[in-house]
Length: 117
Image 1 (cartoon, rainbow, N blue to C red):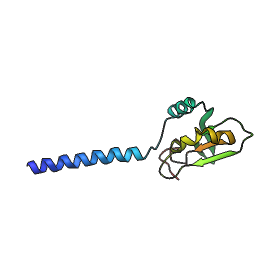
Image 2 (cartoon, rainbow, N blue to C red; image 1 turned 180 degrees about the horizontal axis):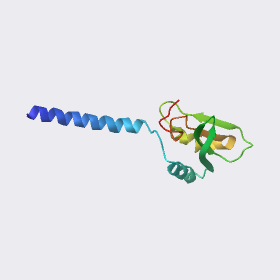
Image 3 (cartoon, rainbow, N blue to C red; image 1 turned 90 degrees about the horizontal axis):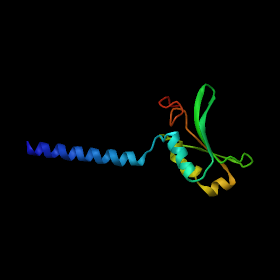
Image 4 (tube, helix red, strand yellow; image 1 turned 90 degrees about the vertical axis):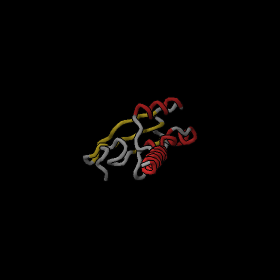
């Protein structure tokens, strides 16, 4: 009986460790409020919202408001969300030369989450 309890304890500990390790490696979504807070702390002017096209709602973050600058579009991989690339929208060197647009792919982030394409 003691061996079983010990094995269960080890298994639960391993599962807990794996859950913490896995969750720290992947951040699937960050709320708009949290994203905006992080951008504001850096003094970045940004716009977060949705655009609809071809029947799909796409979530975006646009950093930098100077439309005369070229647009740098960043699209995340799978799985993931635009939140994974927030550091680019906060990068002052990038923002001196570009507007930075982060997009959530359909079905990821806040672009109709769960209906992946």
